[in-house]
Image (tube, rainbow, N blue to C red; front, side, top):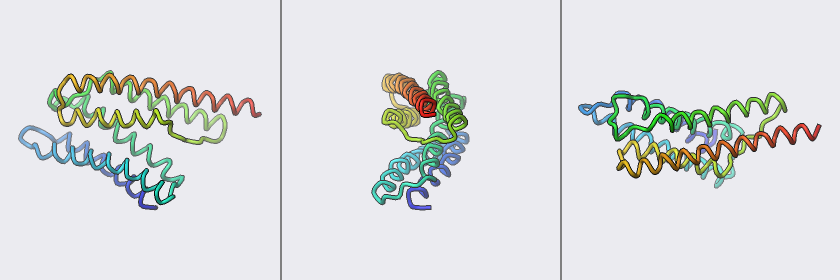
Length: 188
């Protein structure tokens, strides 16, 4: 358990703090808003820092290669679900359901594809694409701008950009998975 993996575990621990504080937020309990925003920002910071430390200290591990995307997905999916469907949150914090559905559908497709590749080939090399990293940053930005109730035109713009990049990256990951299956079949 190296420093980068510890930061990833911290990110996983911050997710329930983030969600619970959103759940308990109300105008008369505004401190829960600050707790949720702080937990979210710390989680985003640990996402950037764990990858940097793993590369800088040359401590990339198999555990980290699995924990990091799990931590990202926990933070992002729970954040999108919360900001779309927690009806007590102010309208300026809400994310449209279509975007949340798109984010979850993409991640579900990637997960199902990964399981299928593993079942068919007996192996799976999980390597994130650059477009996937851009999509993750945009999704985190979407959550942040919604949490701080950014002006509607700015939020609408990032909703559209995030939706497009989520869709495009989903297509790239699907093509990559198809290529892995094709290469496995031609090597047999």
